[in-house]
Length: 138
View 1 (tube, rainbow, N blue to C red):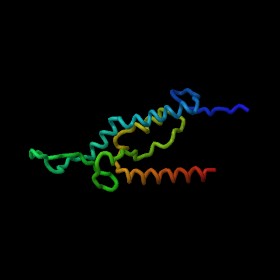
View 2: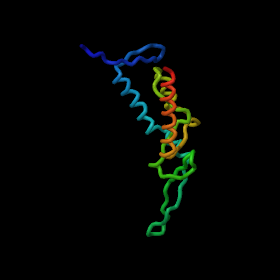
View 3: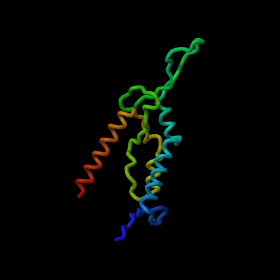
View 4: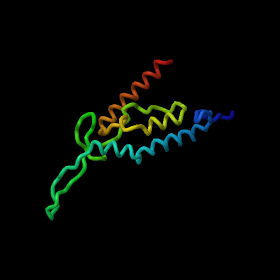
């Protein structure tokens, strides 16, 4: 018995394309990873940052560092404890690359800086809603 490989159908520029599932997943992964170096991400974080003095060097110059405010809990964090979140979730790929890219690389109004904990809570709540919605549809 020959196992059929899965294919992924999508629309782009008014045409329907068929890709092996593995290739489509690779393309979507590259698009998502691209947001980590996207200027929109940096701009969102820079809107919520301030420079604070944490002490001084031996020569008397002040030690300064950047801290970032979580939009939800309003606490201040180091950059490595911050994430950029889409206010309106991107969600899964629905078959239209243009729509997916527009949601992923959205305007600043749809982005917010959240601490890791707040982002985790929001994502978990969204995933739970999605799982419930899929179960109740069948």
